[in-house]
Image (cartoon, rainbow, N blue to C red; front, side):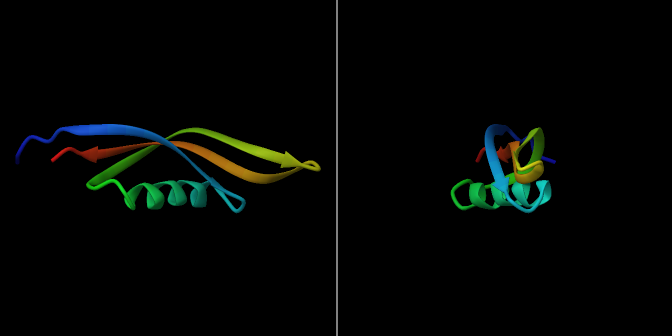
Length: 68
């Protein structure tokens, strides 16, 4: 097995539907411009409350990608 070097980048995904969708949105958008994404780590979960109900989710995500 060869040695790998990774870089971390922190991004924030959002969704009006769920935390899961917020993470998936973040990773999918990052994958449009970043190659070799191999893992993610959810860091913070935030949301917006409107009229006593959750209206929007935000998740700070660290993505790890292999450096060529």
